[in-house]
Image (cartoon, rainbow, N blue to C red; front, side, top):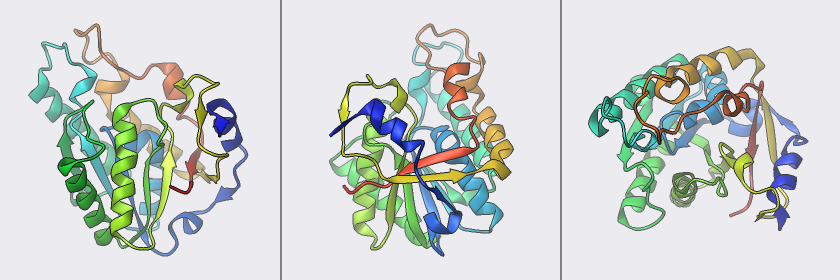
Length: 246
């Protein structure tokens, strides 16, 4: 076991990887717990893969309605539709077709880790892996301090068990918010992907999620938005992916 701080710091020294190193000759599937995680964690990878005409599918697990639970301007159904429009626009900028996006609309903050709904979600992810002829599946880090992000890992793990010879990669969204001394899994192994050529597309995709990165919804004091300090974490040309044994 190592501390979260040392784990994440070590990731800065991962070896660099090309698209071929990560995907082999196939496509990729990205599992996002919420609409916006796909752009934050894998936007450059998606754009680079599509630029090479690789098949990429995105599966968004939750409906995203937990970000502004107290808004009167955007009650649950209106917010659900807004966030779906935002993610559609974002992945379109990254090069995906409408059919490449699969929104499961599970309840935000209550994405299941196990049980029938989790099994159904895993089968949906596995179906996308087959459609993309994917050798790689990308999901949020198992230790990300958000219950939906942890559930996304568990669902992705189940999906990989259904499709032979798929590599599972993890990306970090909220890991830097862990207490530095918190113990996590063994010392990390992983890769740094250079997305310099497509970083502008990634930033444009992130900006599509206006409900998350602007003051668009201004009537909820409990709103969960991404401030400049958080967005700065995703401004780098590099995306980091862990590859750890289950």
